[in-house]
Amino acid sequence: MQQLGAIQKSLRLIEEHLDRPLSLETLARAAGMSFWHFQRTFSAMVGESAGSYLRRRRLAAAALRLRSSSTPLLDLALDCQFESHEAFTRAFKAELGVTPSAYRSGQDMGVGALPPAILTASALRLRYQHMKLTPEIVTLPPRTFAGLQTLFIVPGSKDANNLRVIPKLWDDFFDRIREIQPLEPGVGYGLSECPEALGLKASHPEEAVYLAGTVVADEAKLPEGMVAWKSRGGLFARFTHIGRIEKIGETMGFIYGSWLSSGDYQRTEGPDIERYDRSFNPTSDESVLEIFVPVTRGRRPV
Image (tube, rainbow, N blue to C red):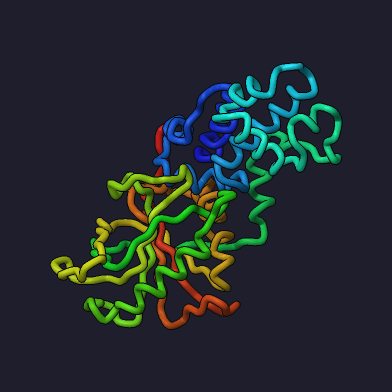
């Protein structure tokens, strides 16, 4: 359960830095994971993104101090790493339903602040007990994927927009698919990666990049506006997601929150790959898509 220990460590770091600067990149490094892998693993295990959890725990700490001290609101806001009194007040009211001043005076509407997460192996087993996904370990060759890409905010974030942004990207790609020569007609591939791996700069701390495309020849000429992603091939864990597309977050949660924590494989570098063919229907309970996660055998030394 090495990944469980890594996320437990990140939860402890958050508690130690409620009133000190702490970036998500620092949390990822401390967990020994890439930023993208950390984001997905944290969200799958804790139930919300790392950025959202950190923000809410800081608000919880602020709520305690509002009742136990007379610290001015501006000082409290800055201590909890908010840029201004106004930003702190907006976030506090969104979380607890009242302003900091009203909360200090006892008008808390009976709403409590977020307590620290208690993450255990038994809790994870309970969360994913209804899911019985067993992957097939397969070897894939190096391939080139071509299509359209966009930034999106990951599921689990309070600002998540994946179910709005990604379907539109697919619509745009299918409008232009005749401009390229797929090696597998009738098959589409969705790839996701962190912006830094592609030399891009994220405008949101929980942003990732998605490619809607298909497999093409390595030397294929790309139409204007399209991009190519390379997969180096190797070992992949192939999972089958059955059901509506809005449920894919549950499958990804199981992969990152349960299977990768307890199996004999660890995730390695490279994008996750989703494969869509004629058995996929986003609104059908019988829809089928495959998810390929790059893995390597064994575990990192503890």
